[in-house]
Image 1 (cartoon, rainbow, N blue to C red):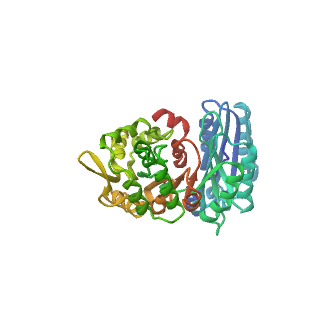
Image 2 (image 1 turned 90 degrees about the vertical axis):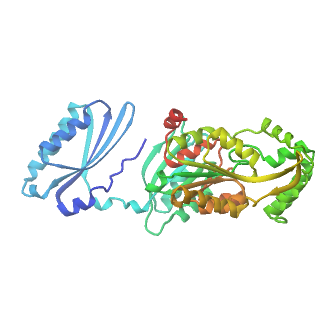
Length: 417
């Protein structure tokens, strides 16, 4: 169920016009056709202005809130006539079998949209104790929840809190405080400014290994070539900081020298998409997104993925082949962390998309610069250093939960995915 928020769409007009009285009408009861019609008809007949209206329905219940004002032209309206208007509303409530509560409304309580944040919470199921902990942290920081929306149909797996933060409390501080409670209650928490840019992304750029797919392609090739342990040792050296990405790539590829190129096709027998990957791409393409993958792996894989998912762009390293066998070398520029960030910028520029409207997803240190460059960088089941640095961190088995971060409801995902 959502809290009712009184918006600020008409704030300037309200200040200019002025009102001798303003009320907040809250209406609750069983939903039925014609409720809004009847309420607005009465307000119009009595010369009242409707300044804002919000409604939420949780079948069969209705909750509606209206900000109602009496204009200055009614300044001489006797108090008893104002009371008569209230009684008419109450009688209407009786006729419609609804409860109508009336209370004075203070417009100074209207929130500043510049200080609004979307806090998205994701878990297999969000328990009451988890929501208690999350909202408790927000309360301690003086942040007020103005709306709560459920993004899933049957189980409470994803909710979106619209949060008003007091001046001086920014996204970084919110993220830091909620990151700690996120680990404690095992709920992923994403904090984003509630702005047009959150819902108007136009480009997604994704890592491939352990992100779009569940595999690490170099490891799969190493198994085929019989050098799995040697490749694993080099990978460990890179993770320990003894080798940079390019150095580790060259050493691992060198171990593949002599492997018949035709055996690379065996990789496709074991490659598996991350759950939700195909649905994520399908929905985003329906929404008009441009889609790209950038991989520190190899283009014989990314080319197939590009064709299979109908992606717009795919970038990766190229294994050199001579006389039908791998030479143990790569050709062309290496797709490392700098290249990933550069390619994101180049695609955005080519498509005339602002960086603020880009979304990047990855899991490893090689993705960090790309995540920092994008309008929003998402760490997906990532290493701790990446989780801490990224704008958002998601630790869920399915990639399509990313759609919740842009406010898409589960029933919309099911419909279009």
